[in-house]
Image (cartoon, rainbow, N blue to C red):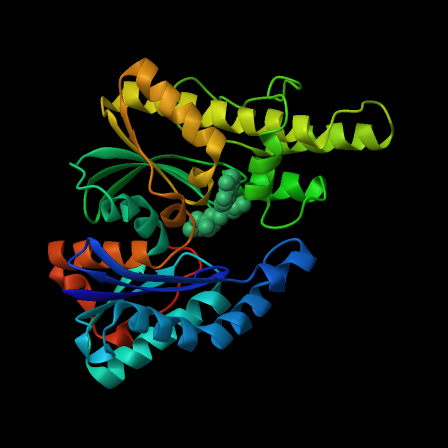
Length: 335
Ligand code: KG4
Ligand code: ZN
């Protein structure tokens, strides 16, 4: 079975062809860093326009690289939400158009579902497992019991982890997207140079909060401007990153204790972070749990994960395969 995945929820125009849920024949991703970098963040209107310019090309390339024709495709999987409406509409309307004109059935996929199931591109994981989805828009902890069966256990009450990375990078004038830039800078700094606050919230809570940490970094940078300290960008990055990683690791340990689940998937853009990957792997060895990370290219936004989620969910729940005219884009779309 050949699935064409299409993803345009934010600032990546992506298409992929996946065979039988596992065999990735192509995975094309066109980013918009050039479009948004001068604004220090994603401008939704510009993102939508850039998707319109790229979407035909990206889908064409995905088919060509996979060496298949559109008529070979059995199912189109497309992101319906959550995300930016001007972005989502481009991928979704393209999928609807192809589906309507060719008769190929389609399935709408929740972007977060794509992140939670991306690991199936690499592993045949056994359910249930705990999934920590850390991205630019979300910091969510789920119990994943089956394809299509997700229970939210905790979430950020304010900024998402990736948002905090992006904002701190902006404060330091590093550019956009901030996560990878902080990651690189942190490797040259001392993670213990500055004791930034960690928000544990009330006893037993699996929720997260990163706004206090962000404010604390802002205050420190402000003081540096007034020459009240001279911490380097490297030390600030390393200390900030280590605060985020410590909270994510300890909350996950708390979740393991509460649920008894010992298989963990860490996914979403921030899961590409080298400090988080090392911190989680060390914690897994010390505390006897198994941690799985999608490859970095499957952590940040991509269409392979959408094709993968679409394939498995269509098999598990055929009623999710719908007429293309029944689906609309949703800016917020809980799982
Ligand atoms: O999953 P994703 O590509 O898009 C959303 O669904 O939001 O995640 C993007 C987020 C951005 O905030 C970006 O800065 C962050 O993931 N990110 C990273 C790294 N790579 C991407 N954060 C920390 N370290 C990284 N290496
Ligand atoms: Zn994402």
